[in-house]
Length: 267
Image (cartoon, rainbow, N blue to C red; front, side, top):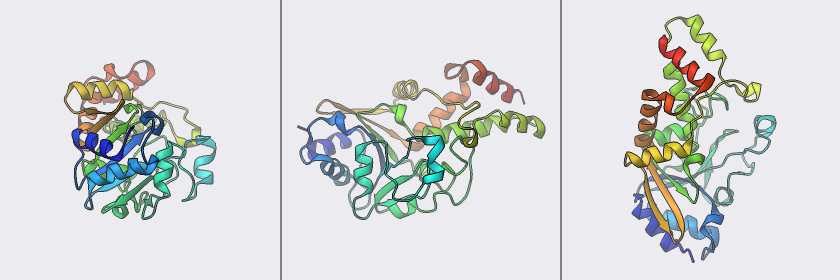
């Protein structure tokens, strides 16, 4: 049976430590029987992070996404990306960021700083709205602070921060174009929230990137009983991801998306 002590030991083995900011993606079912249930999982994380650390989870609202999220958002709207995220969100002293599609909940020393003013400044291109992953978002804050990102029983297909990286990649590509009219035309071909996902966007395969990061020594793994835990450092792994997307786009894209990338890089 999984215990909070076993969870803590596995986290330590994959590089999570006292004082870290740590966000985790998870499948509670993947753990099997847990002595103490969901609270034991949270206790395991927080025992490693200590009083100086901060624990965070994504509290996304994905059901009927394009029709309902911005229209029906409210701060107490349930997270639907895993049982642990909703359990954690409702615990005492947990803060949640005020953003309709990609909110984050956190508890600990940096929780208020991490979650407040999610949409305050620094918009970035994104199919989910320009402020989902803006400069003041928890996602950019975790990137800049090189937070630990942990995956409990799930692959990096569920790496929410990848959308921040895709936006930064798009902006770099558009920056190659010297003609403002051409840049505007190329940008007009991208996905926008208002058009329900119609258009191009450089979504990359998270599992493929997981293996690429493993090959580079940037992915740490451990077992808690039979459940695999993965861990990456947010900034280090993100910078490597952006480098690979830039250097070898043909490894990640094909068809119209690859043509769009090549056209941007021509200037």
